[in-house]
Image (cartoon, rainbow, N blue to C red; front, side, top):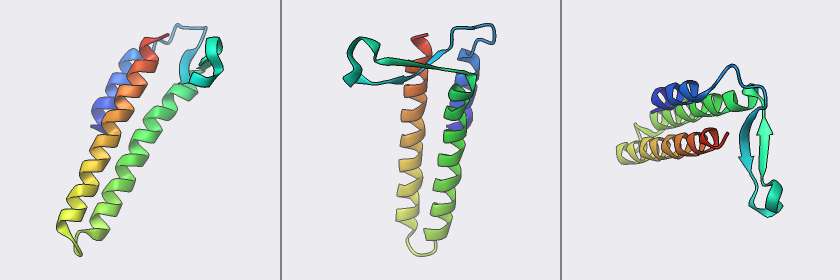
Length: 96
């Protein structure tokens, strides 16, 4: 899921764009709710995906010998978080 999300993010990035990307949405700011950022800010989504992947994999491996079902639940929650991250990053990149 992390690899698929990374590929989707990389396909949405336009290297010729100069006005930036929308990287945040703050509902409490009203008309200026969209915050723009650079390509580095968009690539932080990719870093987040792999940090989540590594953290959930290590945590699952450490708890596997104690409770197999808990390890599988941790991996499932990791997949859910990766899916939600892909949806959010896609939604922000579509708005540009």
